[in-house]
Image (tube, rainbow, N blue to C red; front, top):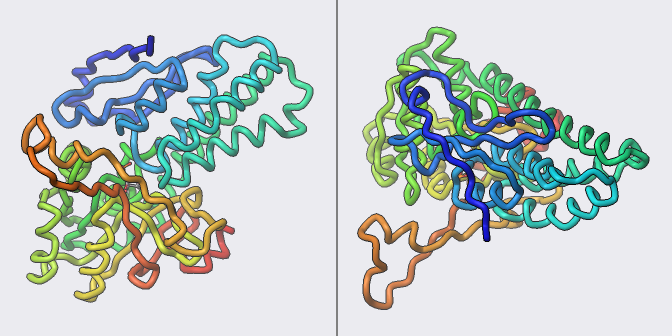
Length: 359
Ligand code: MRU
């Protein structure tokens, strides 16, 4: 019988400025708390996850989403996998069994694979070789916490590095959600927005609604209005008209994987936005931590693109699949070529290929 995660309504978070994307509860035998993003913006429910399978289910259904956030969740999933074990060889066997499925449960964001590999490399390192069960689990748990803290730090530094690209009185457009809800910290693209606002500049944000799962209208708008930053949600197809009317000054999005040459995968629709920006001479920035760069691949054609269930498309027009022989295509990401990107905003500054600063 699959375990169902314990769910808890969290009514106070609905109205306060404070919320969390994910956090560990308790000591190393604890559990992983996640805000269920599938229910935003109308319900604020915390999932209390006790097994790696529950974390994988949450990642696949997008209860937790965004490249850095799923990397952190993946690391904690491995901690959950060892919960009932006392013997180091059992810990090793269990992790070898579980790691590949956690690593591959969403294929596009490299952060998930990188963080699972980082945990497994530690498990196989000299530092871990002679540790008994409890000490080995403690070592792995401290690595997962370090991954979470590093992400928080990167987010803050991305904000500081990029804030100056948003001028006073401007309109910024973003796609999907690259905010606090996509990371363990303040976000990537939205961290830049938050920092510019903090520095006193005033501007507005256009949030593409982001079909089919509406991360823009459900999540980005939810985050921004909590900070009282003016936000206007537009249909994905409306962006072209806003560019044409001269209503957009700068584009900033996140990314799920950036190849060595700078090609960047992000939520489906980002390529269209970048092409529009290029056609209209508007700067287009990708904001992402160094953990989103994949120097094992040369260019964007090598990035695996997740294909998601067709129901995500047709369910908005009713609970049943329309009758007939209609085919649906639901790629979750697309590739923006490096030639359309003005700069890559990272924790070490706004950088350019070949990205020597972070290799
Ligand atoms: O399918 P999602 O919601 O996980 O897609 C997320 C995005 O495309 C984000 O823009 C990306 O992960 C960057 S998050 C800082």
